[in-house]
Length: 99
Image (cartoon, rainbow, N blue to C red; front, side, top):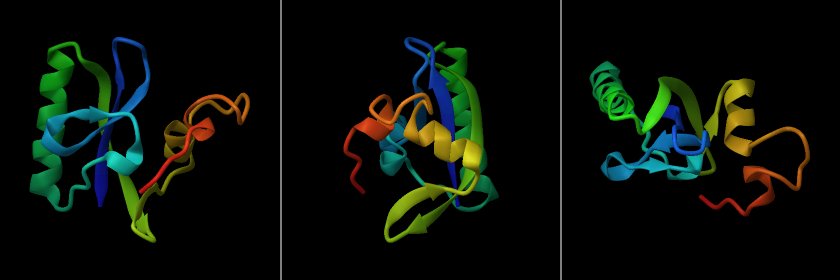
């Protein structure tokens, strides 16, 4: 299982490709892709958004579903999903996240 992630050019925030090819700010709202063809199609959507200067640095990353919640496998992606590590009262980790 994979999700597609990037950084939004407008403000640099981490975003994920969600339903309807919309870029969402919460990994819990990301679309999960399975299989090479699905991932390739999603990456093509991301490449088009990059060409349109909506996002930058599009790539796929592995995730799991833990109790119905999308969870990144890699530490780097867990940090990106939670927000800056400078202070727990800042970033995405300071906001309520629901599945």
